[in-house]
Structure formats: C-alpha cells, structure tokens
Image (tube, rainbow, N blue to C red; front, side, top):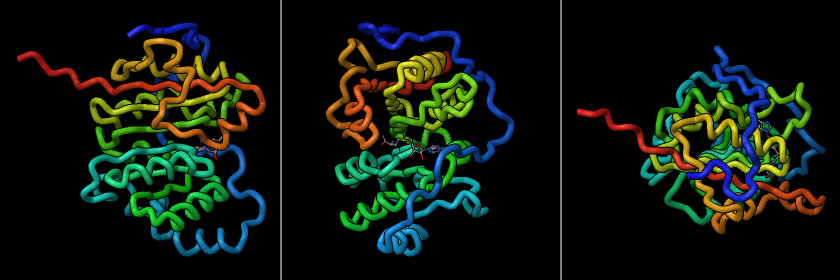
Length: 256
Ligand SMILES: C[S@@+](CC[C@H](N)C(=O)[O-])C[C@H]1O[C@@H](n2cnc3c(N)ncnc32)[C@H](O)[C@@H]1O
C-alpha cells in the first residue's frame, strides 16, 4: 500500500507524538462539558435514560469493559470517540441493528442529543461513556472492536497544545490492540496539520495498513460514512476534510 496516494497529507517527523505510553491514564478533558441550559426534555433524558445506557468509568464494576458482555449476541461492536451530536453514531446504529455501538463524549449537550435520537428511533444497540475516551481504552480487551471512529477530533493546532490531541501514537497503538484483525480505524479532520499528524501516527503502527490507493480515497467520504455537524461547518467555512481509513492487519502466524 502506497504511503502517499495522490498528494496525500504527508507524514512528517515534527509531530512530537510520544512513542511511549503514559504510565497511568488520567482524565484530561479540555473544552466544555456542559453547554447552554438544557431544555426540560434533554434534562429528563439525562436523568432517566442515560443511567440505563451509561458505562460509568468511576463505578468499580466498570474496571473492565467487555463489549461482548455489553451486547450479548451482537455480531460485532464499534466505538466512536467524541461523537459530538451523535449523528454519525445514530446513522450507523440504525443501519446495523446486529452490531453494538459504544459512544464516548464528555460534552453533556451532545450526550442529550444522542439520547433524544436513541429514544425517538427506539435504538437498543447503543451504550454511552460520558468521559475522556483515554480512560476507557485500557479497560477494553484485545481484539474486541470491529471499527473505531474518531471524527473531527479537536485539532489543537498550536504546538504547545499538541499533547492534548486525542489521536497520537499512544492512542493509535491502543486502537490497533483493540481492533479485530481486518477491523477498521476511521479518522477524519479538517486541519491539515492534524491530518499529517494522524497519518504519521497510524503509519508508525505496524499493525495498521492505510487503505487509500488514490487521492479520492482520502478526499471523499466513503458512502457508508455519513457527514457530521462539524464536517458541515468546516465545509461552510471553506475547509476541506480528510478521511483516513486503516485496516488492522492479521496477527502474524508464528512459523512452525
Ligand atoms: C470538533 S468536535 C467533533 C464532534 C463530532 N465527531 C462531529 O464530527 O461533529 C470534537 C468532539 O470531541 C469531544 N472530545 C474532546 N475531548 C474528548 C475526549 N478526551 N474523549 C472523548 N471525546 C472528546 C468534544 O467534546 C467534541 O464533541
């Protein structure tokens, strides 16, 4: 697989991404957690529906989160990190009732939006983590996810803020561990610097293979990947999004 199909966002060595895992996961959420005052319906959803769907990482019974136990009988489980208003997650969950979906989002306004859609559409294949996704990753077992989506994560363009980026070598290593062989990591951004950074982090991970063969593969959103509110805003403001797909390679079979 070519490293730079078309004039792809090139990989550079200046990302500063840490190659070493941090010793202990800490909660690091930047940006807002609660927005404008919640409307009564959204407040009701947070009080009544959220407790039924929530995986509360502060609760000791969630020291380990096994997706197979969350969705007994599901064919596969997917994870979306930073689902924002939840429109991509809902679209996928509606079209794949045979799969389970875990969404992570610390912003309560977004969580309430997702809950409203879950209620309206009667979705029974969604669970929610209202927290920093980095706290969830180490609690998930190896090869437990079919797809991981990180769509338009906060770009943190200033160099001194790069360490806040949710996609980095450490999290990409965790994504590779969590994906089943043949599973897929999907990343999107409208920030060219973050696109290069993401690509560099993913290409440094030997268990992942970039699926792009020509420029259209990363310039255009694949048909089974709906647009999000953030993407629409980026386009309105004249920014061009990038869509990166990586496949988890099969584990190497030891020679006999
Ligand atoms: C720019 S928004 C994009 C939202 C959505 N994916 C979209 O495309 O519309 C980034 C989202 O990531 C969430 N986020 C920020 N830090 C996070 C973290 N540590 N773990 C999970 N989500 C996070 C933010 O609350 C925000 O909703």
